[in-house]
Image (cartoon, rainbow, N blue to C red):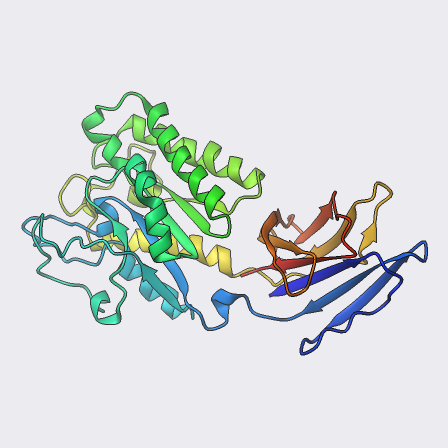
Length: 360
């Protein structure tokens, strides 16, 4: 759903846009200015036939290693098979992206028992999972990955390699590594939805890992949300806890190797959590106008919209309907009642200013 708002400082009360269904409202100001609101229904690109391109970034857990090198436990492509099945069942068109060769490259053996459907047969065995991958390593190659993959959504599950056997005491350093990666992604590719995972536990409780997850949930994701960035988090740690258990109540039956890699039951839990996090991004109500646009006494332009409670919406801006568009001019989050307001403190000197509300 896209809504475009044309802010026009002209005594013209209607804008006719060829080949576009329009709903026009006009607001005159001192007989010398008007705001023409042009709205139409149009599905966002990711829902108009083009599949949602999903880039899964992480270490061996993203690859989906089980009890390698013996591989006696079924390989379900990590959480990716269960996530694919859920997204398709919900009506989504998706395409996994990435060119990691693991696990088929054979450094740690090759899977012997494959879950169904086999993602290779569907051209969906694409990801960016690599054994021993860290946030710093991802940051060093993310530019090339983004250029090759062009994702709409990035799923990041990274950090477990930094906490082996309790040897990492400097949690702050690991947090900074993740923060630096996220900052680079949101700065260079602001249009991408980034979901950061609170990572899964080892079979033995690890306090530093819990502190890392607390940072993701309580500091990292909220700080970017306040800046209007498309960053959310998902709790994967709790998927490995016994029902009603504390953080140290880790369910050892969900591990394929008795230590870190999930078995099919564990991966299915991860798939459900990832699905809910993705579905939350794309089930939004389309934005609609919720009032007459106005020029404020301070010269700002303001317009109110109604959307989905708690949903985020991207605002693009341009001086011509044909563009070029300032993509990601700002991102706004609807309140508990579904309302959000665009207030542009600097509409500019151009005779016309267009605003486009993009909701997936």
